[in-house]
Length: 271
Image 1 (cartoon, one colour):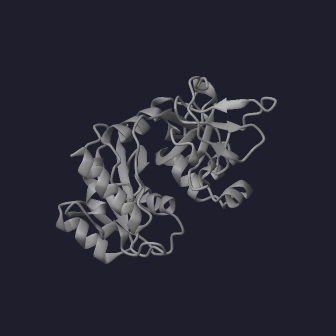
Image 2 (tube, rainbow, N blue to C red):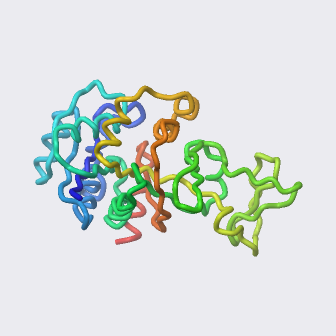
């Protein structure tokens, strides 16, 4: 099947205006995302979708492909869908423009999930290793079935571990959370939870079968989506099948100048 990677990028950001063009290791942020996306073996084309002429021109200046899209979109998914409507590809991958540490293998992994004929959408999860992330509403948690399909996504700590007040181990040496408590206690641990009982965070990269993406973006936001402020819940509420795969890779989404500094540090240490 033919695959198109679309990187949505807008200039106006409340917390970090001009973020896609912010310099990172001598390159604009969006260039890191674009070049990493080019490394995906399974993709046929990579394009940046933007409503900013400045971003459009900058992408062209470093040899990338870019298309201008409407400034009326309320989400990156809608921007990706606009591009998908005008291009003939079987699978569309949404790689967020603020994740400069995205790896080509992660993109290939999310594409390969759609080889399952039952799947409409593919995405990634990662086992949580830092205890504080469990209670952090900015870290979206995911639960999925034995068949690898998503059951729910939430900003709350799911699954909830209820075991008669017993301590629930997270990971070796990481800590535990007391059942019935919102308090995370960091203490050494020797007995990790079984894999099916661990906490997983959602990594916000998606692959869509083209028809599924177009149908999804024509639907109005649903009740759960509005409550949790999570777009993927619209897909689940409408019966779309989201297949997930665990990744071992960590990424740093850049939402603020401080996040950019973290990404700079990470790249310096890994180079």
